[in-house]
Length: 393
Ligand code: V1P
Ligand code: CA
Ligand code: ZN
Image (cartoon, rainbow, N blue to C red; front, top):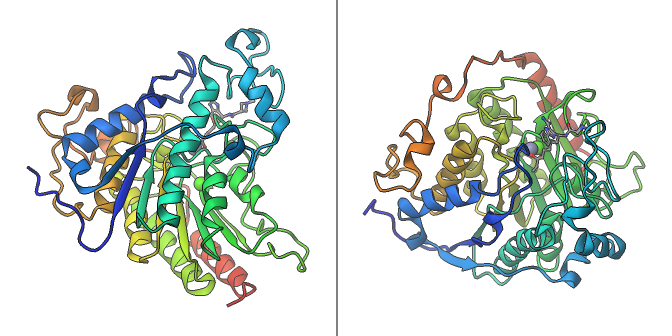
Protein backbone atom coordinates (compact mmCIF):
# COMPACT_ATOMS: atom_id res chain seq x y z
CA UNK A 1 0.00 0.00 0.00
CA UNK A 2 2.85 2.39 0.80
CA UNK A 3 5.13 0.79 -1.77
CA UNK A 4 7.04 -0.91 1.03
CA UNK A 5 8.76 -4.10 -0.12
CA UNK A 6 11.60 -6.32 1.04
CA UNK A 7 14.97 -4.65 0.73
CA UNK A 8 17.07 -5.99 -2.15
CA UNK A 9 20.23 -7.84 -1.21
CA UNK A 10 19.92 -7.81 2.57
CA UNK A 11 17.62 -8.97 5.38
CA UNK A 12 16.14 -7.09 8.32
CA UNK A 13 14.70 -8.95 11.32
CA UNK A 14 12.34 -7.49 13.93
CA UNK A 15 12.33 -9.06 17.41
CA UNK A 16 9.52 -8.29 19.85
CA UNK A 17 6.85 -9.81 22.04
CA UNK A 18 3.50 -8.31 23.02
CA UNK A 19 3.94 -9.92 26.45
CA UNK A 20 6.66 -7.45 27.39
CA UNK A 21 4.45 -4.47 26.72
CA UNK A 22 1.91 -5.45 29.37
CA UNK A 23 4.22 -4.74 32.29
CA UNK A 24 3.97 -1.64 34.48
CA UNK A 25 6.69 0.02 36.54
CA UNK A 26 4.01 1.99 38.43
CA UNK A 27 1.67 4.93 37.80
CA UNK A 28 4.19 7.75 38.23
CA UNK A 29 7.22 5.95 36.77
CA UNK A 30 8.40 7.44 33.45
CA UNK A 31 9.29 4.07 31.84
CA UNK A 32 6.18 2.91 29.99
CA UNK A 33 6.57 -0.48 28.28
CA UNK A 34 3.36 0.40 26.43
CA UNK A 35 5.47 2.61 24.12
CA UNK A 36 6.53 -0.66 22.47
CA UNK A 37 2.89 -1.36 21.57
CA UNK A 38 2.58 2.10 20.09
CA UNK A 39 5.80 1.59 18.10
CA UNK A 40 4.69 -1.80 16.76
CA UNK A 41 1.30 -0.42 15.77
CA UNK A 42 2.89 2.43 13.82
CA UNK A 43 5.36 0.06 12.13
CA UNK A 44 2.43 -2.20 11.20
CA UNK A 45 0.13 0.54 9.98
CA UNK A 46 2.83 1.63 7.52
CA UNK A 47 3.05 -1.96 6.24
CA UNK A 48 6.67 -2.42 7.29
CA UNK A 49 6.37 -6.02 8.60
CA UNK A 50 6.06 -7.18 4.96
CA UNK A 51 9.62 -6.06 4.40
CA UNK A 52 11.15 -7.87 7.39
CA UNK A 53 11.46 -11.26 9.09
CA UNK A 54 9.28 -10.91 12.19
CA UNK A 55 10.04 -12.97 15.28
CA UNK A 56 8.04 -13.25 18.48
CA UNK A 57 10.75 -13.75 21.06
CA UNK A 58 11.05 -16.11 23.94
CA UNK A 59 12.35 -15.39 27.42
CA UNK A 60 16.09 -15.65 27.93
CA UNK A 61 17.06 -18.53 30.23
CA UNK A 62 18.78 -18.15 33.60
CA UNK A 63 21.99 -19.54 32.06
CA UNK A 64 21.86 -16.96 29.29
CA UNK A 65 21.46 -14.09 31.79
CA UNK A 66 24.24 -15.64 33.88
CA UNK A 67 26.69 -15.07 30.98
CA UNK A 68 27.02 -11.53 32.37
CA UNK A 69 25.03 -11.20 35.59
CA UNK A 70 26.03 -12.68 38.94
CA UNK A 71 24.08 -15.71 40.15
CA UNK A 72 23.31 -14.13 43.55
CA UNK A 73 21.76 -11.12 41.84
CA UNK A 74 19.70 -13.26 39.45
CA UNK A 75 18.51 -15.48 42.31
CA UNK A 76 17.27 -12.42 44.14
CA UNK A 77 15.67 -10.96 41.00
CA UNK A 78 13.72 -14.20 40.45
CA UNK A 79 12.29 -14.29 43.96
CA UNK A 80 11.82 -10.56 44.62
CA UNK A 81 8.09 -9.87 44.85
CA UNK A 82 6.14 -6.59 44.63
CA UNK A 83 5.31 -7.16 48.32
CA UNK A 84 9.01 -6.68 49.12
CA UNK A 85 8.88 -3.18 47.63
CA UNK A 86 9.63 -0.69 50.45
CA UNK A 87 6.78 1.80 50.78
CA UNK A 88 8.51 4.58 52.64
CA UNK A 89 7.04 7.95 51.69
CA UNK A 90 9.83 9.70 53.63
CA UNK A 91 12.54 7.86 51.70
CA UNK A 92 11.35 6.83 48.22
CA UNK A 93 14.84 5.70 47.17
CA UNK A 94 15.05 3.13 49.95
CA UNK A 95 16.22 -0.09 48.34
CA UNK A 96 16.04 -3.72 49.41
CA UNK A 97 19.20 -5.13 47.82
CA UNK A 98 21.17 -4.73 44.58
CA UNK A 99 19.62 -1.25 44.12
CA UNK A 100 16.20 -2.90 43.68
CA UNK A 101 12.98 -1.50 45.11
CA UNK A 102 13.88 2.21 45.04
CA UNK A 103 12.01 4.72 42.87
CA UNK A 104 14.13 4.06 39.76
CA UNK A 105 14.11 0.26 39.80
CA UNK A 106 10.89 -0.74 41.56
CA UNK A 107 9.85 -4.33 42.18
CA UNK A 108 6.73 -4.85 40.08
CA UNK A 109 4.57 -7.80 39.14
CA UNK A 110 6.24 -9.97 36.49
CA UNK A 111 9.59 -8.16 36.75
CA UNK A 112 11.70 -11.24 36.04
CA UNK A 113 9.60 -12.14 32.98
CA UNK A 114 9.90 -8.59 31.68
CA UNK A 115 13.70 -8.68 32.07
CA UNK A 116 14.11 -12.09 30.49
CA UNK A 117 11.91 -11.11 27.54
CA UNK A 118 13.93 -7.97 26.90
CA UNK A 119 17.12 -10.03 27.02
CA UNK A 120 15.50 -12.75 24.87
CA UNK A 121 14.72 -10.17 22.15
CA UNK A 122 18.28 -8.89 22.06
CA UNK A 123 19.88 -12.35 22.23
CA UNK A 124 17.71 -13.53 19.32
CA UNK A 125 18.71 -10.41 17.39
CA UNK A 126 22.41 -11.11 18.05
CA UNK A 127 22.08 -14.75 17.02
CA UNK A 128 20.43 -13.81 13.70
CA UNK A 129 23.39 -11.50 13.05
CA UNK A 130 25.91 -14.23 14.00
CA UNK A 131 24.28 -16.80 11.72
CA UNK A 132 24.12 -14.18 8.92
CA UNK A 133 20.39 -14.74 8.61
CA UNK A 134 19.95 -11.00 9.23
CA UNK A 135 22.02 -8.01 8.24
CA UNK A 136 20.15 -5.62 10.52
CA UNK A 137 18.30 -6.96 13.58
CA UNK A 138 15.89 -4.72 15.49
CA UNK A 139 15.17 -5.11 19.22
CA UNK A 140 13.24 -2.06 20.45
CA UNK A 141 12.47 -3.86 23.73
CA UNK A 142 16.19 -3.93 24.56
CA UNK A 143 18.78 -1.22 25.08
CA UNK A 144 18.85 -1.28 28.89
CA UNK A 145 22.36 0.13 29.15
CA UNK A 146 22.67 0.97 32.88
CA UNK A 147 22.33 -2.55 34.35
CA UNK A 148 25.50 -3.84 36.05
CA UNK A 149 26.75 -7.35 36.73
CA UNK A 150 25.40 -7.29 40.30
CA UNK A 151 23.10 -4.29 40.31
CA UNK A 152 20.01 -2.71 38.80
CA UNK A 153 20.30 0.96 37.85
CA UNK A 154 18.28 3.67 36.08
CA UNK A 155 15.21 1.57 35.07
CA UNK A 156 17.54 -1.25 33.86
CA UNK A 157 17.77 -4.64 35.61
CA UNK A 158 19.34 -6.91 32.97
CA UNK A 159 21.87 -5.59 30.49
CA UNK A 160 20.56 -7.12 27.27
CA UNK A 161 23.13 -5.12 25.26
CA UNK A 162 26.09 -6.70 27.06
CA UNK A 163 24.54 -10.15 26.58
CA UNK A 164 24.01 -9.49 22.85
CA UNK A 165 27.55 -8.13 22.35
CA UNK A 166 28.97 -11.21 24.12
CA UNK A 167 27.18 -13.28 21.44
CA UNK A 168 28.58 -11.10 18.63
CA UNK A 169 32.10 -11.55 20.04
CA UNK A 170 31.89 -15.30 19.35
CA UNK A 171 31.96 -14.52 15.61
CA UNK A 172 33.12 -10.93 15.15
CA UNK A 173 36.61 -9.79 16.21
CA UNK A 174 35.66 -6.16 16.97
CA UNK A 175 32.29 -4.68 17.93
CA UNK A 176 31.54 -0.96 17.92
CA UNK A 177 28.92 0.02 20.50
CA UNK A 178 27.24 3.39 19.88
CA UNK A 179 24.76 4.92 22.34
CA UNK A 180 22.57 7.91 21.38
CA UNK A 181 20.34 7.73 24.46
CA UNK A 182 20.49 11.09 26.33
CA UNK A 183 22.04 9.23 29.29
CA UNK A 184 25.58 7.84 29.55
CA UNK A 185 25.82 4.16 28.60
CA UNK A 186 27.72 3.34 31.80
CA UNK A 187 26.79 -0.35 32.17
CA UNK A 188 28.02 -1.30 28.70
CA UNK A 189 31.16 0.83 29.07
CA UNK A 190 31.97 -0.84 32.39
CA UNK A 191 31.35 -4.38 31.12
CA UNK A 192 33.87 -4.00 28.28
CA UNK A 193 36.23 -1.59 30.04
CA UNK A 194 39.28 -3.87 29.86
CA UNK A 195 39.02 -5.20 26.33
CA UNK A 196 39.95 -3.80 22.93
CA UNK A 197 37.43 -6.09 21.23
CA UNK A 198 34.61 -3.65 22.00
CA UNK A 199 34.84 0.10 21.57
CA UNK A 200 32.06 1.94 23.40
CA UNK A 201 30.91 5.41 22.32
CA UNK A 202 28.22 7.30 24.22
CA UNK A 203 26.72 10.69 23.35
CA UNK A 204 24.91 12.10 26.39
CA UNK A 205 23.98 15.07 28.48
CA UNK A 206 26.74 15.48 31.05
CA UNK A 207 26.23 17.34 34.28
CA UNK A 208 27.81 15.24 37.02
CA UNK A 209 26.00 16.76 39.99
CA UNK A 210 22.50 16.89 38.61
CA UNK A 211 21.96 14.61 35.62
CA UNK A 212 21.81 10.82 35.83
CA UNK A 213 24.11 8.83 36.03
CA UNK A 214 26.80 11.53 36.34
CA UNK A 215 29.59 9.59 34.59
CA UNK A 216 30.96 9.88 31.02
CA UNK A 217 33.38 12.84 31.04
CA UNK A 218 35.28 13.60 27.83
CA UNK A 219 38.55 12.52 29.46
CA UNK A 220 37.21 9.12 30.53
CA UNK A 221 38.57 6.86 27.80
CA UNK A 222 39.05 3.54 29.55
CA UNK A 223 41.71 2.24 31.94
CA UNK A 224 44.49 4.76 32.57
CA UNK A 225 47.08 1.96 32.53
CA UNK A 226 48.45 1.86 28.98
CA UNK A 227 49.16 -1.87 29.32
CA UNK A 228 45.47 -2.58 29.72
CA UNK A 229 43.99 -3.59 26.35
CA UNK A 230 40.91 -1.45 27.03
CA UNK A 231 42.88 1.82 27.26
CA UNK A 232 41.51 4.42 24.78
CA UNK A 233 38.58 2.15 23.83
CA UNK A 234 35.86 4.07 25.72
CA UNK A 235 34.75 7.26 23.98
CA UNK A 236 32.52 9.79 25.73
CA UNK A 237 30.79 12.74 24.10
CA UNK A 238 29.48 14.97 26.90
CA UNK A 239 26.85 17.46 25.70
CA UNK A 240 24.67 20.21 27.16
CA UNK A 241 20.98 21.09 26.89
CA UNK A 242 19.38 22.00 23.59
CA UNK A 243 21.72 20.42 21.02
CA UNK A 244 20.24 20.65 17.51
CA UNK A 245 19.95 18.16 14.64
CA UNK A 246 22.61 19.99 12.63
CA UNK A 247 25.17 20.02 15.44
CA UNK A 248 24.46 16.44 16.50
CA UNK A 249 24.67 15.04 12.96
CA UNK A 250 27.95 16.80 12.23
CA UNK A 251 29.41 15.59 15.53
CA UNK A 252 28.11 12.05 15.05
CA UNK A 253 29.44 11.66 11.51
CA UNK A 254 32.81 13.16 12.33
CA UNK A 255 33.29 10.92 15.38
CA UNK A 256 31.80 7.68 14.08
CA UNK A 257 33.44 8.16 10.66
CA UNK A 258 36.87 8.51 12.27
CA UNK A 259 36.28 5.55 14.58
CA UNK A 260 35.17 3.38 11.67
CA UNK A 261 38.34 4.17 9.73
CA UNK A 262 40.67 3.65 12.64
CA UNK A 263 39.07 0.80 14.63
CA UNK A 264 37.54 -1.05 11.63
CA UNK A 265 34.73 -2.74 13.56
CA UNK A 266 33.28 -5.97 12.22
CA UNK A 267 29.78 -5.31 13.62
CA UNK A 268 27.82 -2.42 15.15
CA UNK A 269 25.52 -2.40 18.19
CA UNK A 270 23.53 0.87 18.14
CA UNK A 271 21.47 1.86 21.17
CA UNK A 272 18.75 4.22 19.89
CA UNK A 273 17.40 5.65 23.17
CA UNK A 274 14.69 8.10 22.12
CA UNK A 275 14.99 10.33 25.18
CA UNK A 276 17.43 12.44 23.17
CA UNK A 277 14.44 13.77 21.18
CA UNK A 278 13.02 17.24 21.75
CA UNK A 279 10.08 17.24 24.14
CA UNK A 280 11.15 14.12 26.05
CA UNK A 281 9.89 14.00 29.63
CA UNK A 282 13.42 13.35 31.01
CA UNK A 283 15.70 14.46 28.17
CA UNK A 284 17.08 17.91 27.43
CA UNK A 285 18.08 17.86 23.76
CA UNK A 286 16.40 19.48 20.74
CA UNK A 287 16.69 16.57 18.31
CA UNK A 288 13.91 15.94 15.83
CA UNK A 289 12.92 12.50 14.58
CA UNK A 290 14.93 13.20 11.40
CA UNK A 291 18.12 14.08 13.31
CA UNK A 292 17.86 11.01 15.53
CA UNK A 293 17.21 8.85 12.48
CA UNK A 294 20.17 10.35 10.62
CA UNK A 295 22.46 8.55 13.09
CA UNK A 296 20.86 5.22 12.19
CA UNK A 297 21.10 6.07 8.50
CA UNK A 298 24.79 6.94 8.81
CA UNK A 299 25.56 3.69 10.65
CA UNK A 300 23.67 1.71 8.03
CA UNK A 301 25.73 3.37 5.29
CA UNK A 302 28.87 1.78 6.79
CA UNK A 303 27.54 -1.54 5.50
CA UNK A 304 28.31 -3.60 8.60
CA UNK A 305 26.07 -6.15 10.34
CA UNK A 306 24.12 -4.17 12.92
CA UNK A 307 21.74 -4.53 15.86
CA UNK A 308 19.36 -1.64 16.63
CA UNK A 309 18.40 -1.54 20.31
CA UNK A 310 15.77 0.63 21.98
CA UNK A 311 16.53 2.25 25.34
CA UNK A 312 15.14 5.35 27.03
CA UNK A 313 12.28 7.44 25.67
CA UNK A 314 9.65 8.97 27.94
CA UNK A 315 7.22 10.74 25.63
CA UNK A 316 5.72 7.55 24.15
CA UNK A 317 4.24 9.13 21.01
CA UNK A 318 7.68 10.45 19.99
CA UNK A 319 9.39 7.18 20.88
CA UNK A 320 7.01 5.42 18.48
CA UNK A 321 7.65 8.01 15.76
CA UNK A 322 11.44 7.70 16.03
CA UNK A 323 11.57 3.90 16.18
CA UNK A 324 9.03 3.51 13.36
CA UNK A 325 11.04 5.94 11.21
CA UNK A 326 14.28 4.10 12.10
CA UNK A 327 12.64 0.78 11.16
CA UNK A 328 11.86 2.34 7.77
CA UNK A 329 15.53 3.38 7.46
CA UNK A 330 16.63 -0.18 8.22
CA UNK A 331 14.46 -1.58 5.41
CA UNK A 332 15.40 1.26 3.07
CA UNK A 333 11.86 2.67 2.89
CA UNK A 334 12.50 6.03 4.57
CA UNK A 335 12.47 7.98 1.31
CA UNK A 336 8.95 6.70 0.49
CA UNK A 337 7.35 6.79 3.91
CA UNK A 338 4.33 9.15 3.99
CA UNK A 339 4.76 11.96 6.47
CA UNK A 340 1.16 11.75 7.59
CA UNK A 341 0.41 8.97 10.06
CA UNK A 342 -1.89 6.45 8.30
CA UNK A 343 -5.64 7.08 8.75
CA UNK A 344 -6.16 3.55 10.05
CA UNK A 345 -3.32 3.65 12.62
CA UNK A 346 -4.56 2.62 16.07
CA UNK A 347 -4.24 5.32 18.75
CA UNK A 348 -3.88 7.86 15.94
CA UNK A 349 -5.30 10.63 18.16
CA UNK A 350 -2.65 9.79 20.78
CA UNK A 351 0.00 11.28 18.47
CA UNK A 352 -1.56 14.78 18.92
CA UNK A 353 -0.13 15.94 15.58
CA UNK A 354 -0.78 13.67 12.60
CA UNK A 355 2.77 13.94 11.25
CA UNK A 356 5.63 11.48 11.71
CA UNK A 357 7.97 14.49 11.90
CA UNK A 358 6.70 17.08 14.38
CA UNK A 359 8.46 20.44 14.28
CA UNK A 360 10.31 21.68 17.35
CA UNK A 361 7.39 24.01 18.04
CA UNK A 362 5.05 21.00 18.04
CA UNK A 363 7.36 18.99 20.32
CA UNK A 364 8.33 21.58 22.91
CA UNK A 365 6.12 23.63 25.15
CA UNK A 366 8.79 26.29 25.29
CA UNK A 367 11.99 26.47 23.23
CA UNK A 368 15.00 24.99 24.99
CA UNK A 369 18.10 27.16 24.97
CA UNK A 370 21.05 25.58 23.12
CA UNK A 371 24.00 25.49 25.54
CA UNK A 372 26.45 23.79 23.14
CA UNK A 373 28.97 26.21 21.67
CA UNK A 374 30.64 25.42 18.35
CA UNK A 375 33.98 25.90 20.10
CA UNK A 376 33.23 23.22 22.68
CA UNK A 377 31.98 20.80 20.02
CA UNK A 378 35.24 21.30 18.08
CA UNK A 379 37.23 20.56 21.25
CA UNK A 380 35.29 17.34 21.69
CA UNK A 381 36.00 16.19 18.13
CA UNK A 382 39.70 17.05 18.52
CA UNK A 383 39.93 15.10 21.78
CA UNK A 384 38.32 12.02 20.22
CA UNK A 385 40.59 12.16 17.17
CA UNK A 386 43.59 12.33 19.54
CA UNK A 387 42.38 9.26 21.45
CA UNK A 388 42.07 7.34 18.21
CA UNK A 389 45.75 7.82 17.48
CA UNK A 390 46.41 5.40 20.39
CA UNK A 391 44.10 2.76 18.90
CA UNK A 392 45.90 -0.01 16.96
CA UNK A 393 45.23 0.36 13.27
O1 V1P B 1 18.06 10.83 38.94
C1 V1P B 1 17.90 9.66 39.28
C2 V1P B 1 18.34 9.10 40.62
C3 V1P B 1 17.23 8.82 41.58
N1 V1P B 1 17.83 9.77 42.56
C4 V1P B 1 18.29 9.20 43.77
C5 V1P B 1 18.88 10.09 41.57
N2 V1P B 1 17.35 8.76 38.47
C6 V1P B 1 16.88 9.07 37.12
C7 V1P B 1 17.09 7.82 36.28
C8 V1P B 1 17.03 8.02 34.81
C9 V1P B 1 17.19 6.69 34.09
C10 V1P B 1 17.32 6.78 32.57
C11 V1P B 1 17.32 5.42 31.93
C12 V1P B 1 17.73 5.37 30.46
O2 V1P B 1 19.03 5.83 30.24
C13 V1P B 1 17.71 3.93 29.91
C14 V1P B 1 16.44 3.20 29.93
O3 V1P B 1 16.89 6.17 29.67
C15 V1P B 1 15.43 9.47 37.20
C16 V1P B 1 14.82 10.60 36.70
C17 V1P B 1 15.44 11.70 35.97
N3 V1P B 1 14.69 12.76 35.71
O4 V1P B 1 16.58 11.65 35.61
N4 V1P B 1 14.48 8.75 37.80
C18 V1P B 1 13.31 9.42 37.65
N5 V1P B 1 13.51 10.55 36.97
C19 V1P B 1 12.03 8.98 38.17
C20 V1P B 1 10.94 9.85 38.15
C21 V1P B 1 9.71 9.42 38.65
C22 V1P B 1 9.58 8.13 39.18
C23 V1P B 1 10.66 7.28 39.18
C24 V1P B 1 11.89 7.69 38.69
CA1 CA C 1 24.18 7.92 25.46
ZN1 ZN D 1 18.10 7.50 28.80
